[in-house]
Length: 234
Image 1 (cartoon, one colour):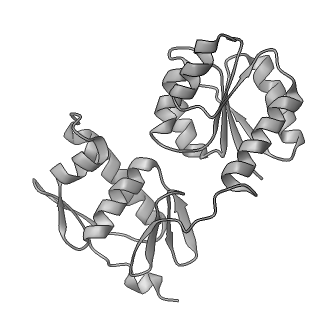
Image 2: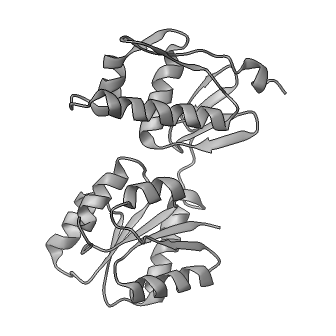
Image 3: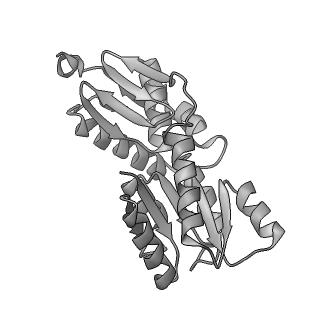
């Protein structure tokens, strides 16, 4: 079963899309709070996103860019705007396809199935995924997952980058400056933003039963101690 996130502010259209998707045996979730699109996306980790352009507060182009900072999952725009530039802007901002309203539900479903096959199914590129491994703990860089033994947890893009950086240098100290550069290039980020991301990584490690591995060296940076060796043993 695949999960489709619907970002559409017309309740009737959103409901019809949800009904058709579920008729095909997949799961569909409609965004209810358009101020919390990113949070709902990270919580749900959908396989495909359907998104309108005209949305409350921020338009679909904005949200497409934000989602692209977290994931490479397929994003399909569904909009009443039929102009060439609207379609160009959607693709330039990270969309994979563009469907104009009014639309045939069979066309929408065919395009969804096509994207699912391309990314996850029969047509997906077969190659060995890049990964970083230490003492049984593995970070899968493309699928953004972390695994220890038989347990797996899903990661966001920034969690993946942070864990990769720490794991590659473990047990050495990684400076704050190095982490900031990896996560945000040269953009200014305050200490609280970095702390929030470190807290999220600690939570992901805890989900695998790894506690007290991520050490804060006050004023300097962070260190990942590989204290999960016993957990990784069969």
